[in-house]
Image (cartoon, rainbow, N blue to C red; front, side, top):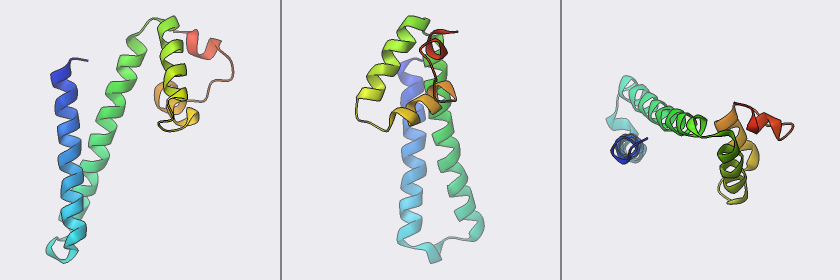
Length: 101
């Protein structure tokens, strides 16, 4: 994915979470419909980023997917299970689960 598209996804996500922070600081100022819309924006912006990450991952050659997944799992950012679920849709039982397109 190009940098501008990912930048837009991040910006949308940051705005959604900023709105949530504002709502949390003054919940009485927001209607239930506004609160629901804020929650939906948070959820949809997270999903858009995850979908983009998954699409980028799937566009890689199988060998590169395995190397990237190993690096992400060892990064200390999130758990190995989280990365596998996000990028593969499941926890791999064997290396072939990653290498198979």
